[in-house]
Amino acid sequence: MRPAHFIASVVTAAAAVIALANPASAAAVNYVALGDSYASGLGTGSYDGVSGSCKRGPLAYPALWAAATAPASFKSVACSGAKTGDVINQSATLASSTNLVTVQVGGNDAGFTDVITTCTFGSDQDCVNRVNQSKTYIANTLPGLLNNVYGTIKSKSPSARVVVLGYPRLYKVPGTCNVGLSDTKRAAINSGSDALHNVISARAGAAGFGYVDVRGAFTGHEICSSSWWLNSLSWPVEESYHPNRAGHQSGYLPVLRSVIG
Image (cartoon, rainbow, N blue to C red; front, side):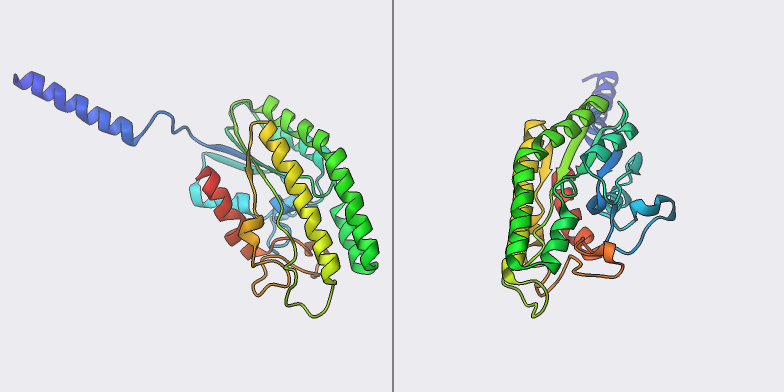
């Protein structure tokens, strides 16, 4: 082989190695997080002052993922109390350059706060009745609302990878708690979480989005387990029944990483 040809071959081979190490497909990540209080980080006790009542914080799973991976850009507009209509408004933050979106919503539409209030102060039957009412809403009304959310996201950022996150079961049944809600109430509340999973996962799949089921990750770490990743009745009250710091760090974050890296 002539020297010139040898040098050219070496250069070509080196270029191929560099291309493999730095594939053109490894585009810069522009990440936007949408959703409700589970996505904003309510329950972790650490919040950005500028987020006000939205209670966004650095210990929420979107911020933890961004801190660990350093995307080209990251913005969370998740907000405590958000329903599907609010997340449609949050979607104004999306752009054609957005290529990663996480979204978590549906619990507030289904009456999460009222379910917890009824089950806390009412009878077992009151609790079961209210959960069943919520499950009817989840089955009949929530699918259309989620379709609207997911369609809006797709129209704003048609090339984005979209990952939808679900909700954990709140209680271990039977558990180690000697006071508080009965096992009947705890089981009813958990059945509401399962109903949300069934509908949210189905609508996410129909939209072509990824879905993260966190119920398995939280198994053994529910309220009334030996290691809680969720707050029970807490102070401030608004932090009750939300993932705590461990819930975001050890529950949501690893499962999200398993899907998006």
